[in-house]
Image (cartoon, rainbow, N blue to C red):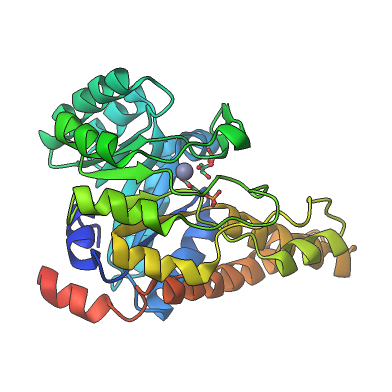
Length: 317
Ligand code: G3H
Ligand code: 13P
Ligand code: ZN
C-alpha cells in the first residue's frame, strides 16, 4: 500500500531510518518488494529522472502499481529522486507520488529557497511532501560534478533558516557522503557532530542522507574477477553507521549504487560460468533473489526491519 512519506518519517524519526531505494526495472522492483516483506520493513521507492526516461515513466508506474497488488502486505512511499522544478511538477500532477525531491543545491541559497518554495506550494496543495537539499555532496550528482575537495558540509544555521523560509518537509544534508561507486578514497566517515548540530536546530525534522551506499569491496572484487574493471579501494559509508545516524535524526537513507553492484556481479558471474547461455531469465531469477537478500540486509542495518506490524497498527491499515 502506498502511504504518505511523512507518515513513515513520523514513525521512524529518532528510532530507525527508512531505506530509499532507486529502481529502474521489473527485476529490481520484484527484489525490492520481496526483500522488504522478508525483513518486514517499510520502504521508499525512488525514481530518478534517468529512471523515468529509461523505458517510460508510465511503465515504471505500472510496474509499481502491479507490485502493490502482488505484495499486498507492503507499506511504502513513492518518491522522485533529484528532481528539477519541471519534473517535480510533472510528478505532483501525476497523482502517483507520495513526495518529490527538488534538488537546487547547486544554486545560491536565495535561489534554492525560491525554487523550493514554489515546489512546496504546488506539492502541499495536493498533500505531497517535499525533500530539498542544502550543501554539496562529493562525487557525481546527476550531471553536476562536485570536486571531492570542495565538498562542503551543510551549515546548521543555514539549514534552520532554509527550512523556515522554504517550508520543505525534509532536508538532504551534506554530512560526509558522496554519490556513486567511486567515493572518497580510503573510505569516508559520517560527521556525527554535524548531524547533531543540524538536528539540534530543527528537532523532529527529518534529515536525509544521500550517497549512502557502502560499496562492499568483496562485491567489487567479485565483479572484477568476472571481467569487470571497477576501481578498487574507494569505500562508501560503513553500514554500522546507519543506525547511530538514524538515532540523531537521519530518517531517510538513499541507496542506489550498492544495488547496481549486485546486478553487475550476478550478471557477470552468470555469463562467465555459462558462456553458452543466452536466456535472460535464469540470470534475472538469480538477481531478483540476490537483490531481495541485499535489501533485507540493508533494512536490518537501518533498523527498519521488523517494524511492519507496528506501522500497520499505527496507520490503521
Ligand atoms: O543519486 C542519484 C541516483 O543514484 C540516481 O542515479 O540518475 O543514474 O538514475 P541515476
Ligand atoms: P549511492 O550512490 O551511494 O547509492 O547514493 C544514492 C543516492 O543518493 C540517490 O539519491
Ligand atoms: Zn542522491
